[in-house]
Image (cartoon, rainbow, N blue to C red; front, side, top):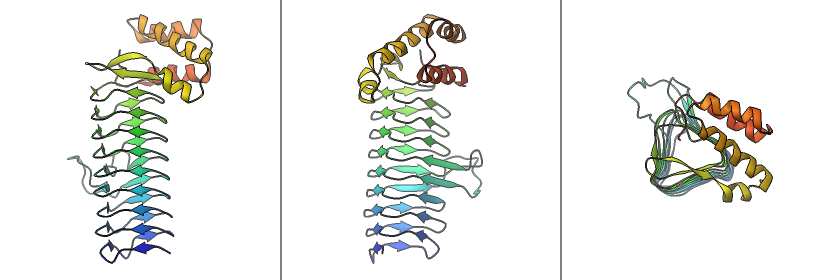
Length: 256
């Protein structure tokens, strides 16, 4: 049974699961779906096209599936998909997709801190921590287990790798490859994310291998030559293959 404040508005066509709490002054629009056991505190807005899973806590002022801030958007029917077990803090805004991809996706077990923004057609993985006032422009991809500090500005189409740590206040227009610390001004490679990798269970041998991969990669002026050095000199574990695939597939280039 859902608990809905008499001061909330829930559109009659909205589809709600079970045991949701809908606080006062919440607005749930047409063409929306909520799973089970979500807690929407007061003044949460769930807009047209939202698809929200279960066990999410959404704090006051958050607005999910907002109209894209993209002049190319012509009102096409798109979605914003949010998974399970997310904590979406105060005044977070997540736009729905455009014709480009048709959907914005936020995975599971993420902490989205106060006042951060996820623009249209972004893809956020699982177990990410994203700091206060960080902003992602359109079609940014964030892989699993990324930690992105406060007030980070990310250019559209950028790709952020898994298990990175990005320093607060960074701004960048190139991709952030996996397992590293990104920081300073301008944003650049600042070493391997030792603490994060150890917390995630990487042993010293694997961490040393990742460190050597980046040494070989960044010692070459041409990234393709660095990738060939990695292939010639290192054991190609799944983690090293991920680095190779990430760098080879980068459309914007990686930070140096």
